[in-house]
Image 1 (tube, rainbow, N blue to C red):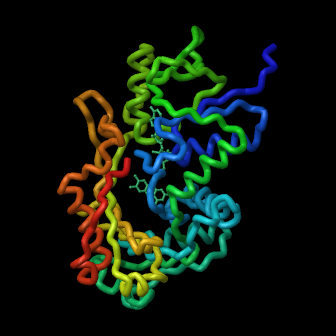
Image 2 (image 1 turned 90 degrees about the vertical axis):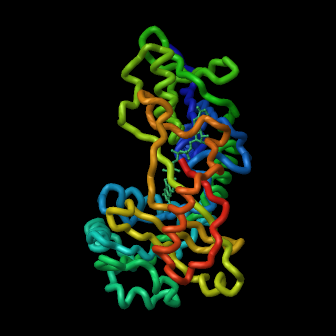
Image 3 (image 1 turned 45 degrees about the vertical axis):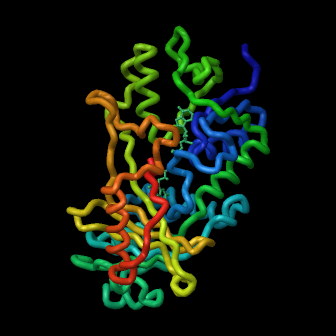
Length: 347
Ligand SMILES: Cc1cc2nc3c(=O)[nH]c(=O)nc-3n(C[C@H](O)[C@H](O)[C@H](O)COP(=O)(O)OP(=O)(O)OC[C@H]3O[C@@H](n4cnc5c(N)ncnc54)[C@H](O)[C@@H]3O)c2cc1C
């Protein structure tokens, strides 16, 4: 009987991979946990959805299961000293067109969560926060959801801290491109093959490869003749464009108490867009409403471009316009002269 401690390979050091490695090693200190990513642990940027200046932290979901899980995660953001240094509970201002506000309020109530959240008519809502959202697009809007218990996190800094903590408690970090999956004669996945041809084995292999997952599964299916590995539409890689605006000192100071703002779009425009409060460099981030796919050949699944860094900084004009629409929908004439820079496609 094999008495050696269990071993795990986690591929991908985004938030899911890092968190999985961290929790496995914390709970099972004897386990052999290896985290593999194509970028070094201290890489200044990553082609990862988790690498970002900031991300919204919220439990404002129509789906009650999402809402419950997000509330649990938010409690961790508030209380765990590893994460709470990166967390900012600025509140959220959610321009709702489909009864979203009431559904979220109902979910919090059903889950017994006592939080400061309410739905306001547009005329009342636009006076809040120094009226910075007074010229947003409110056409067809029923209510604005205000949830004082939502906010945002400094995503890339939190991710970096998570990776460092994982390494400090004994997770082995390997910088490598995972090319293929390895199988034994009984069809069990026994590890991975990396770009330089090395094989790394473990009892369990967990793919946390984000938007690259369908492409990696496709390669694994082709090389091992295992058709069932193909994602077959079960997951679809998608990109969204972001951009930054650097506010002048005066505007930045009037935006200090700004909440996250999400604009639930009219259907012809797309699902949602929005903006986050200024960071320490007075920059606010917008994301556009288009969620797009990229298929490289008719039979291949959507996947990020094959260039280094997924060509994430090479943003076509049409997607820059997408981000500008987000500014216009959120700030109207207030943001008309703002210059949006540092566009990025986030996969
Ligand atoms: C524009 C945008 C905005 C979002 N905003 C929010 C938000 O505000 N709040 C929120 O909660 N969520 C948000 N999300 C969702 C959230 O960011 C993602 O769900 C989450 O970051 C995904 O993490 P992940 O670890 O699965 O993947 P990723 O963060 O993409 O990490 C995958 C990692 O795997 C590595 N990798 C991939 N393939 C290989 C390989 N073959 N070999 C080695 N390494 C590999 C990559 O380099 C990367 O480091 C947003 C997503 C997008 C795209």
